[in-house]
Length: 136
Image 1 (cartoon, one colour):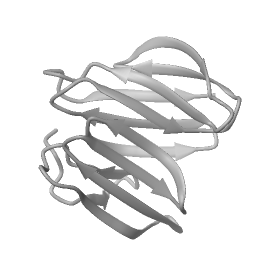
Image 2: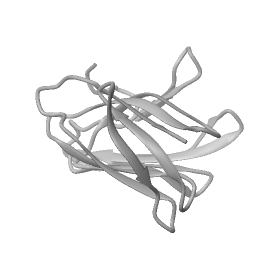
Image 3: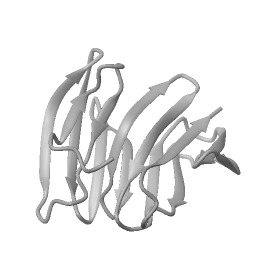
Image 4: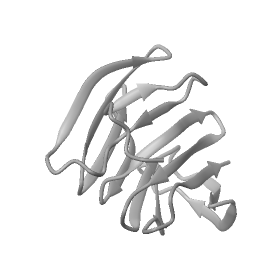
């Protein structure tokens, strides 16, 4: 997967793709409508951030490209790519335990913090796209 040319788009399968880690300067899209919700994305080489209805949903440092992002009441899953390893912060329910899988392998059960965030590191340099799944 290469960086997407649109900053955010809806895929044919109903998922979202967003972010472009190859951009030298910040780009953003606000009020992107998807499944009855409004999304805002900011992205460039050093950061990618996604908000849903004004609430935090995803952030990576450095920037990433995310494909097939889907969330439901049980968690989130997506594919992520970058030319560098990345620190991901995902907005989930507060004080809840989640099973986290990166590249198809369990990295254990993590508990979200009081603000509902889970932090994970993902090795992305020269890895192509890596699948991430976070489920209750």
